[in-house]
Length: 68
Image: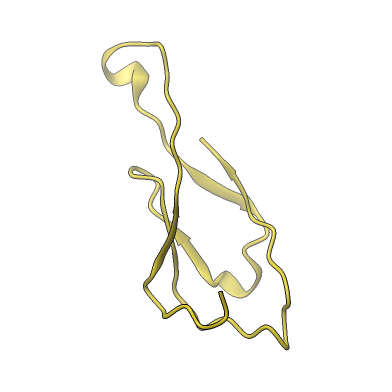
């Protein structure tokens, strides 16, 4: 992923809720692991993208936790 360009979408979250109407709306959030804020998560669509260039030599691995 080090060569992935900034603003690239790297994952899409998908969750469902059995409720109907406004009660079925799902909001996503990053709860941990977004070191140096290199990722951005669209809270409505669940699209996760890179917003800063990754540097494997500085941080070789990211583990991001996301909650719906």
